[in-house]
Image 1: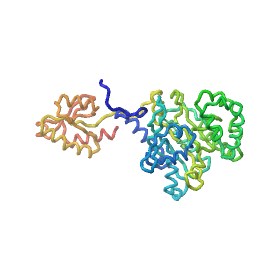
Image 2 (image 1 turned 30 degrees about the vertical axis):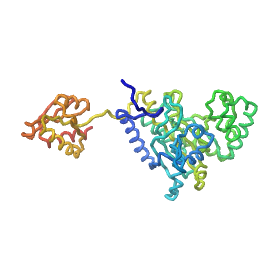
Image 3 (image 1 turned 120 degrees about the vertical axis):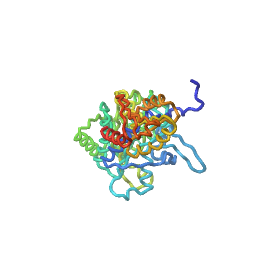
Image 4 (image 1 turned 180 degrees about the vertical axis):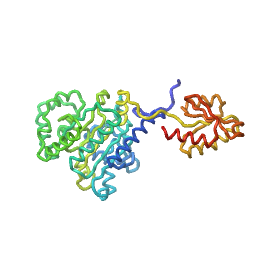
Length: 424
Ligand code: HAM
């Protein structure tokens, strides 16, 4: 085949009709289950102000320093959103959602953009679903957020996951820990990667998130943050663990889990799957009690998670889980001659009105070719119409699977197809 003239950008993929069915299945499941949890959907623009993402996520994070797609137009700086926590918080503050009362329990589904090196499970345009609960500092909120995340994977049948859990404390605890971490790293400062050297003064916690090989020996033996948590932070962490256990949700403590954005406080978690290879995080999240204020709102605690949808599908493939039903159509009208073709076109709306999915040939093909096409479209029934059928007002209804035919009036065909449809 000739090379196409135009292709998608590196790391950006088309989701083609055969694949879309599983996306629709997952999206429907998320909407249905979110409703059961009383989470409300929020939709924000694909582009945000660059400054929001820089302020929200942190200048020294990988995302901001290396991975954002940004451009300017006039005086405005645009960024393709790399995640939705900062944008949702921006929408919360800008639209005064606090005035709706109570905590805002929001969820979203949509595309995100990060200029990462593409590989299996890592794209430049990828999709997340996620939840942000804004306005509660109670461990119940942390645990409901985690429970929703696990619930979706359980519903789909992805059960061999590990929930990694940590607390990175409040600012007070974290300051003490940062000092201890710097003290520990200082003797080996020269051996750290350039990026970690940069992070050493301003944000040493980020060093724990480093992927650079030369940093790994120092990360492995670093002091752990859980030894530096103050009483409030310890209490919150204790409650989260207790409530998770009450719900029968297993977790594994990981004291080096700091996550990729600077907005986190207290609880941090990731859901890991052994079926994903190098990019093994299905989902991640945590508390971000200072972000609302950072973005210009009143001090408001919040917690959330986001999950990679492409990675969920990779896990499904590995586990042999098929999502979404196969393509099919209830009825295919097969016509012979112009009059019948016209009848077919006028009959399609009547079938659809009765709740029956229906199609016909768009290409003026022979009857034989139309039957072949009906098979290809996985039509359950063919309604075969020629001059004689039109004169008699009776049409041949062919059950494509059983290869059985009967001659019926149009009303009887509709009755039969609707009752069949209801049984499915
Ligand atoms: P994150 O860990 O950066 O967190 O992303 C969440 C999930 O998105 C990852 O676990 C992964 O499954 C997926 N993901 C991230 N980058 C890519 C990529 N390049 N290609 C494919 N999948 C990817 C956040 O985004 C936070 N906003 C989560 C959060 C919500 N924290 C609090 N609330």
